Amino acid sequence: MSAALLPLFVAVPLMMAALLVIVGDRRVIHTVGLLGTMIAAVGAAVALVIEFRSGGAIAHGISSWPFGIAIPFVADMFTALMLVVTGLLTIVCSWFAIASGRAANVYFAPLVLVLTAGVNGALLTADLFNLFVFIEVMLLPSYGLFVLAARHKGTLQQVAGARLYVTLNLLTSTVFLIGVGFIYGTAGTVNLAELAGLATTDPTVAISGAVCLFALAIKASVVPVHGWLAAAYPATSPAITALFSGLHTKVAIYGIYRIYAVVFDGDSRWLWIGVTLFCLTMVIGVLGAVGEKTTRSILAFHMISQIGYILLGVALFTFAGLTAGIFYLLHHMIVKASLFLSTGAVEVRYGTGEIGKLSGIAKREPVIAVAFFIAALSLAGLPPFSGFVAKFTLILASVEAGQIAAVVVMLLVSLVTLLSMLKIWNGVFWGDSKASNSDDDAPAVPAAPSPSGGVATKQAPVSSATAVAEWPRIGMALAGPAVFTAAITLGLGLGAELLLGLSAVAAEGLLDTTAYVQAVMGS
Image (tube, rainbow, N blue to C red; front, side):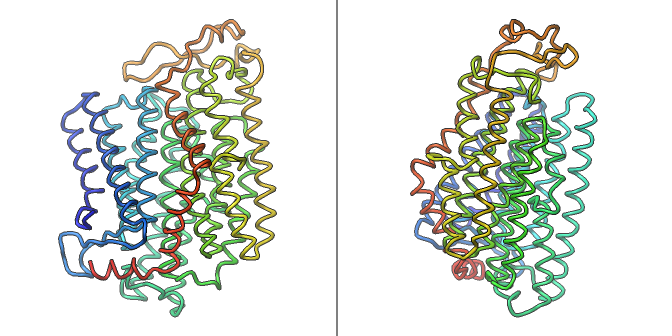
């Protein structure tokens, strides 16, 4: 692929978003425009993966302005893999939103496309200030999607969650911009190629870079700045929760990997800080899930815990550690989306995600139950799923690096993760088909479609097994996204060699940033 085509990853979604706003409320056009654009983006990203299978990087300065003035777009294997998975998850989550009625709003597709443009720009830019700009491009439509998720008058939880989400991200963006300003003030540039390795020799650049990493750690939900995610993500709709889980925190993680590899050149002096914080993130995240009573709250805390695993790869900063971390990142994006979408399908159809209000769903909904079971076992790290490969390779990398304490933490956290997944399985999917025994606690039951195209809900008039049996079942349109992503995690487990090989190429690019830096300098 020509480097000059890289800006199209941002330009095309933006132009399609504008076009869909102009055409107005025409759902077929919106659906075709959204999915068609995303499929094309994934296809182009796959072409990049094929191009970088032997390593290397390509870069382009926007509008061919001279180096130092042009916005540099650069791609290597790590970038290409992220573009593929983020694009794929956007398609799957949009599919779920369409099936659940959440995509009926005239602004849904344009907002998702603007979000996509921001994600792609953040992954492709080699300029720290423009990384800030593209993160803001990501966040602005996200605020809109958060609001659209609460039809009509939002609940107190939705309002509080949206307020926390907006406030936290505005604060974090401010901190990141301050860090970027410090870097420019001390180094005279914010271009990653010109900053390569500078933090290892200039303490002022290292401190400034640490401010940027701190801001990204907040966005990634690293302990001790993690609580916002568990409170905010469950407050929106299942489709948006799954979408945000695959995009926002993962772009922050990508930024941490990239900045530490290029600007800090993997400086070993500070790695112990990362190992400590990320092990704490594993433990506190998984323990936070113990007392939760809804499926999405439990999964949100586990998301925090798993982020500790992913970032441990960069804290090891060895070839094996980076390879395992990148594989874990890609695996987790898919598996976590599958879990949010399978439990989300139950929540959309039966009106509740609270543990104990429903049981025996597996008998009525065997397809969605199998999808959840596969993704849950993968998250816990059991074979033959991708989670086993991810954790096993990370454990081997930790042993090789002499981080035995981290290995013990990973094994113990995996056990608690499995117990939490069994909590959801026993509380929602297993047992006899029945609702709560109290009419006051009866779950909401799907009713006729609302004027906005969503699915309105009403309180169940009765709470017996007979009533549950009469409820409409989850159709394949709604179950399909969870089944598809569950199948991917099984495929990645059985055929792990392919993705491990690609992750190894990406890891080599982070260990030796010469190709990345030269591509940017030559742009």
